[in-house]
Image (cartoon, rainbow, N blue to C red):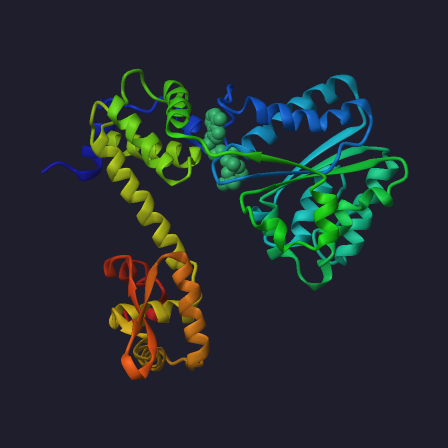
Length: 400
Ligand SMILES: Nc1ncnc2c1ncn2[C@@H]1O[C@H](COP(=O)(O)OP(=O)(O)OP(=O)(O)O)[C@@H](O)[C@H]1O
Ligand SMILES: [Mg+2]
């Protein structure tokens, strides 16, 4: 019998590789050509042009569903402006930050401060009040007489970072110009949450959304073109079958025209094809990839739940299709097994609605004659998936 390691290594050496350059399929890769986004590129560029003329652009909000090219377009424009700035020594700074990638508001502000050249001594990584951090950032901008553009990507997540102390941060950011004497600050917010604005303070809406640009969804044909470009660069020639390409575009287009999903699909399909030592990426690989991506998403969302949510999911698994009351009983039993105090039925009912939003469980209102109505829940994912994911949680090992 051959050694399992050697067998795989031999196969990898002799087998054909389908993917020529994996990095091109990574979500941070910036392609040379951005297709179907000319008007958006023009609009965003236009609105930032005043900065090159040493004047102050309007604050800008960029909206659009996930995977519609917002980050890509804004990053590309920022880097192009940056190139010119470096050549001609304009007192301009462009700063990019992503609220989703930061765990605290402090962290986000420090990331901005560092990009503006604030050293550790001037801006320590912890310990200051948010208002002080902000003050130091503004001082730096004013001292150096800079015109600054702050891009805050996934700006809707900023709300989650904001605690009591930083409650007013968006307001302060949008009004920073009133505090700056020899300099200016322009805010570019990017969001895929179209309801984001409704949640803001009206004072912030009017100043943050001075200008707004909406990125529309890609249709299936546009996704196909985007994929073709990317495949040409990343894959060996002729290694992706036409039906596979079509299916990727159709699947991604079927949701809301998400280019990220389209590229993820072809990447995972390519990896599966290589692993199976196939010569080409077929439709079957794309279907398998789609299923795998779906499972990974479910797994990640299951893993991210706190303990009591996990117990509720287990309770539904054990009493699948049961009413809220029955699920509560099952949940209380599980609490005993793991040695935790159970939460109130009211809280659990609320929790069920929250979990339902994620799509992992599905609730159905059932009328019970004179007993009124109750909601019955069932899992929309396999029990194997739940067991597999929760098995790693030490507290839950006994119940799984
Ligand atoms: N027009 C396009 N041409 C080529 N590639 C594109 C295009 N639009 C998007 N992509 C690619 O699709 C992926 C997602 O794009 P991007 O990250 O810009 O989406 P987004 O609108 O910022 O989404 P989210 O709201 O989820 O952050 C990236 O890999 C990007 O390179
Ligand atoms: Mg983005």
